[in-house]
Length: 260
Image 1 (cartoon, one colour):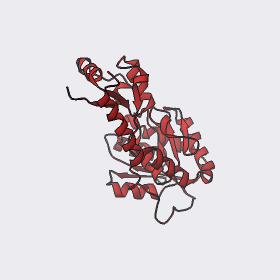
Image 2: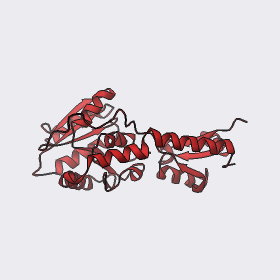
Image 3: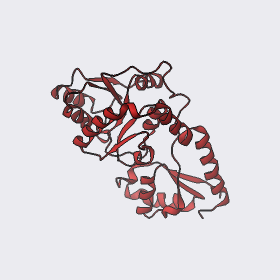
Image 4: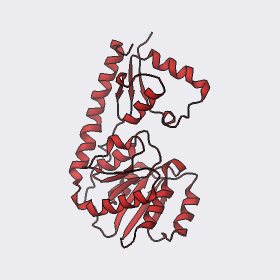
């Protein structure tokens, strides 16, 4: 009889990847919760589509942007050219780094480099793909890095790209934005909540040509993005103060049993 709040993070709801035997447990968890939340609008829709709860009963409770650590670079960023883009994530099919390599290869007449931070099962294949596309001089694979080194990679870049096929949220977007970077992301779920015209661009998922156009547009518009505005959005809407405020309100609702 202890009241509890339930916050949904599971990307499997977006791709119908819940094992059948788990559904009774999932439904029991939802039915007993005093308050419900999901980390993105797309995930709230998935909760409703699976009949777990009406959308009106599910609050949007975004993840936390660690803005104190991922802060603006202490000595500014290097000036292009080359235009330096960075991506951070596990090298798995879902993250679609191969599509980003294809998009980079479609660009002509631009001096663009790509730094890839992360490791995973597709790394050997992606390294070979970069060589096959003739991108050896433009692409660096740094592997998995500690947080401080990830921050250094973000400080060294002019823009961040998240080319995923599907994202429940996209904390790495907030980390990049917290350093003042404009972002390019696919409209793959969570990014639609995070990326605005002031902070970056959205393109359709699974479309290398659209991603290539996005890279060109991001480079053309780069000087118009204001790093302080981008960082302020990450900090004010997703930083610790906002996160704590939302969390306290969610648990107050659970104690009051409003969902039940």
